[in-house]
Length: 284
Length: 271
Image (tube, chains in turn yellow, brown):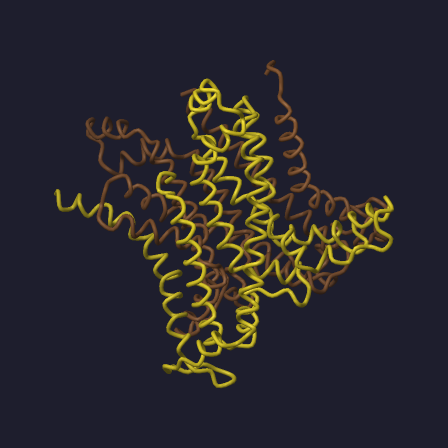
């Protein structure tokens, strides 16, 4: 009977683990295997060749694409953080009424549950050549001809990615801030700390786990991103995800797989780096 | 509420309002532009008001077919949610007791969320190709959706069970209830409000999923894939009209979930 009881957790986790083994672990293992296969122009054949990795690691396109992707990652991460922290701070510290707090948080959340693609399309009438921003700028006489780089540019890609993923930064930071014991703030005030000192010495260190969980989400989401880069970027906008997607489009699975393995390694490295700066286990 | 507000409060308030404008501005823009008459254009100003373009969405020959992909996404969303709940609730319950390998399972689940989505799509695509199975929205597509929805459902249930008082179950067991009976009579009613939340979350995550599905949906597109195809070849406000309709649908789902959650938790409190 006690033996059966010891096995109980394993029965309970088995279905979920099987789902993840079939649709996550096995596919990624296969990507690793296929990355050593050969490609003869129209199909892949089992083999053991390092040509795919040689192709990926020696081409200048790879380096440029990674640099461009990192540029998106850094910009989107910085903007998301700069946007999410004040919003989360306002919600958790400036709103005293719990009911209003829930309502305002929901207002910030709802758009993130609507279609990603529609939310990209929604920027066309705003940022387009004859869009609202340009109409306002020309109407005010700030510019003479419409600004062309607002849409189908790196700028638009960053706006689009921030628009899609800011929520993943707001929610964990809000969660961290809500857990801060308010007596700590009062104590700091009683000891004569200024508002800025409280922010720097009390709130920021306690919000760090939330910031790092949000950062992991934003960084990993942007690393594999290709749809926003396709929709919002110009022809030149490149990202690793888009590169892999193009290679898959031309059926070069082994090459795409080698690229994906490199992408996974780089992404995991970034996650490890973030985790090394902050211990997030307390948040779980 | 009566205390005097500081300057930083007002600065933060302005920032918050700008953020809300950033969130809703583009959505409002496409809603306005989709409510135009036949002379409507893709850009402002709005020429005339009407529901012409909303009607156009349902005309197959003009902008592609959306009714079938919508039904597919609906079915897939319901399937994905049902499976996600069926596997994540027991898994989260297992985590209430200590067992060897628990942290491996936890990391595996989190990994499923943070793996770049193109890898999931490519990997499942290769798996089906190697096995010689045809890709379909209800097989490979379903799997891709599960890698995204199951971890969310699991993490939420983990949080729910963290705050769960085990004394109710102990009481039931002391009174002679079996494990299954305890789950049905005690655990299930207590976690029901959270299950409503997960249902809607899982459904919307699946209903909007694009990147993980993009390579593995097979011949028949889900709704987001169909919409994506449309972005390249439709240059009329019908595009915005479709956006308006799907957004209204998403809002309606959230409203239903929220009121369901409230009614249920109120009834529980009222006893």
